[in-house]
Length: 183
Image 1 (cartoon, rainbow, N blue to C red):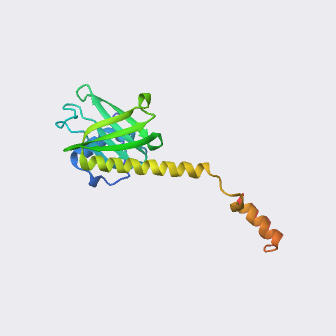
Image 2: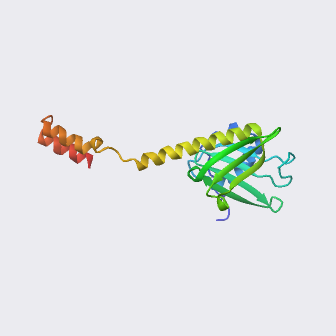
């Protein structure tokens, strides 16, 4: 009864693309991931660069579905994780500095519609995160547009079937069989 070990969730993405520090960070948020969610990039805030946090730096996780922001506190004993779906992100901006970059997120998720700022992200990682977020925003907007725009009535298979029957291209029996298969 007490010997059962808690089953670890399996990852659906290739972990070999991440270094040991990134894998350690991924393990801290693994229970928040959906069964099919893929982490595409991990970026940790610098401890030493201007804007960074010496003791408890934030970590960004860009997945195929959302952005996760892990914010440790109480000297790392506890952490808050914000999960922001790409559908709730209005805009993302990259501000490049000399050594690091700042990722600025405009979303209704943040209070008073203000932007979320994460300073001191390594330049390459920040650019990668911003590109993934932009891709997620575009994908979510395309998906929303497809849902809003109904298909043309002329594309309805039943309408096409009725036209074929009216033209005499198919018999009544064929029409009834095909109609049943559509329902």
